Image (tube, rainbow, N blue to C red; front, side, top):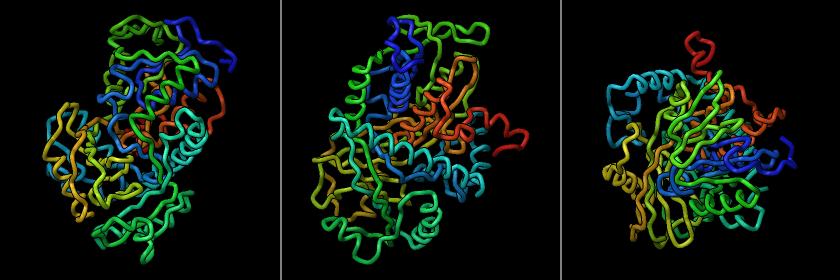
Length: 433
């Protein structure tokens, strides 16, 4: 794949990327820069409401590298996860794949496994921020990226003490996190009143204005020669001699040389079409977008124990968070939304609830250890890039670069070993968690 290669004849690209979310678009970006002809297939509209790239908080930057699987969550009961009001809720159901996933999740919560996951995610987030800083220097998408820093708040003494204990480890991994001293929170957010025990601050806290970033990035990619086919769903594939020789979609057939599967929560269904399974579970998250209230923050604020984030978007404020393992159900739980807004009132008691513009929910595909799956799996010409979970916006730039490096035989910047899709298959013999 030479960098001077022109886009291939339409319908027969070098690479088909299944999924037009941020993860898929960054795969296309890096592959096209490496010279590949690329076609992206998106089941809906680019940046549409069906996509997690639409209504999430858009968090990027170096914060938030702690994996979903962390010490203290080793058993479902440890966080009352079976209660519908829990920040991380598991809906009880007879599902063999869910039970297997929860067992692997419990093993990944061991301190050594969680520490390894943190190192992997911290490195990916650092690399992703470097890529974003370069990309967002371009005029087309410069104003879709903001880096004002992020404030991490804690309501309880226990939560704040636990967070303080992680600062040294976090800094050792290259993340500039620090404890805010007396008066510093008021200096950062003089108009916002907090009811908290303490706070941390990361000056590299950043976010993308979604879905606008997705739309502008899509235009940039089309300008580079990437073909993006919207409203195009993969309905089947033909595997011959352990290679995908044909992809059938709702609009046409394609015969790509390579396939990248990065279809979000629908990656498991696409994998089944190709004859293999992925250890992913969809975790639903929510957001509510309001008019910016008086006294609203000027930078992102994480309400840590409640797993809720507050992000300023100009004249509006987006409140996002909650996690629930409830399967592929396409429904908004009003109870969960009310709980999220109640958390905001607990931390920010003087913040008014203004007019609501949008209530959204989306599915984030998550692995048991919270680390993505990136690498070869199933047919010989298929590469998976899935399982980014609730921090996918901040991992996608480095993940897409790794996909391009693996497909072109370039020495990777990101270590691919901790991301191998088969790492859970090997867990049966005890070699990995």
